[in-house]
Image 1: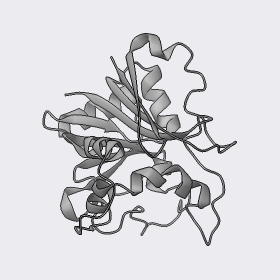
Image 2 (image 1 turned 135 degrees about the vertical axis):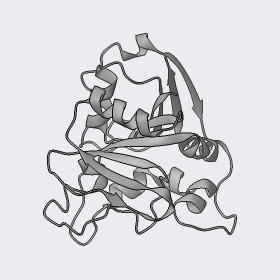
Image 3 (image 1 turned 180 degrees about the horizontal axis):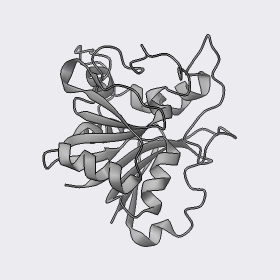
Image 4 (image 1 turned 180 degrees about the vertical axis):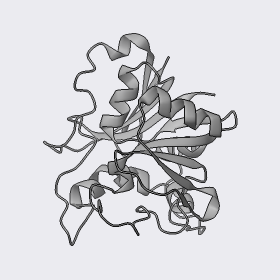
Length: 213
């Protein structure tokens, strides 16, 4: 059972975007950041339900496949679930429709109490107000021996890294500049000393960094 991170960032280290509007809740910068990932066949099949076989199948797709492999539970922040955009909407059920792609128990870190959600396809959302250590213990109990993914955003990932709880981290660096947002690397000086680091560059220009404890 490993504790894993998979995160997309820009060349200047930002893992969040800031150009969202009510009419465009993701923003154009988010589209640029995730372009290579959403172009993969694995993303199209697993997230969009497109079984036509379309999508890229090379290095980016290999990492996309690995993202979903052997995950027994996920921990994510309130922002990833969308509570920053819909804080007072009790009917909000996340960005992913009635059948989210996680297919496992998901624990959402939040200070706001909300009832759990059971979705189609095996995904459930449980809202907890706990420390990284406490949240991880709860997720591992539900993971049935499989890996636990720390799903983001970057602030949550940094909390788990600082606590020394991450066994493996994959960071995909998109060949774009964002200039603002939340940076992954801030306050993590010397992090590489705790891991063996390798890199691989995909045809899309995305640099895939892997940190193994």
